[in-house]
Image (cartoon, rainbow, N blue to C red; front, side, top):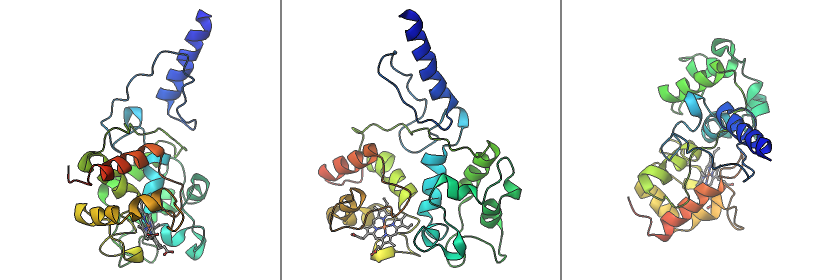
Length: 236
Ligand code: HEC
């Protein structure tokens, strides 16, 4: 009995610290898992600086329309599809950023292969660093879930980081798909109050499911966004 408990605990800790392909699962029998050391939001969800492919890299690629929206399963220009781990790995060499086509294209300063192409903005240095770090860490399908408390619904701390990661790449000043811009509080508030924000992320009928590829936002983010809207969509 005791042995079983210890084994369960070690397994739980292993999954938590290991941060590899397995999602973090707890079966409810061991003690509570330690609190993740990270602040809420999308910052550094994995322990020890490990980059989460599912939580950080994939949303960045999916939401950078010029990188992947224009390269999603429906439109795949030049056959480049960046909406899943397997698809992304066709353009990546683990531990070798400079040998990875995808990395070369986001760092190329103007050649034909430079991505995103003109007139879309290039990725920021932080975004490029994140992708390089992930490749150097072995380019694994890491899936560490960011800390998320459904009770927290502050615009600056919770709502904006999610929308910025998952939506802004296709809904900004340069590219506003369907006329929707989600770059800042004023714009997001308008889309929230019209019902379109929740309608699209909850895949409600009558709305386009958003984001259009890469899967639905996790339940915790959806709950936070709903709470923020219920509480008046304030700039808090
Ligand atoms: C990869 C690009 C891309 C990403 C990422 C993306 N969108 Fe969109 N969005 C589109 C496109 C394209 C359309 C137009 C769809 C159409 O009309 O067929 C659209 C349309 C919309 C619309 C208007 C459609 C409606 O039914 O009201 C809303 C609202 C919207 N998106 C919100 C979001 C939100 C919120 C996110 C993040 C959770 C998001 N989008 C992420 C490309 C994207």
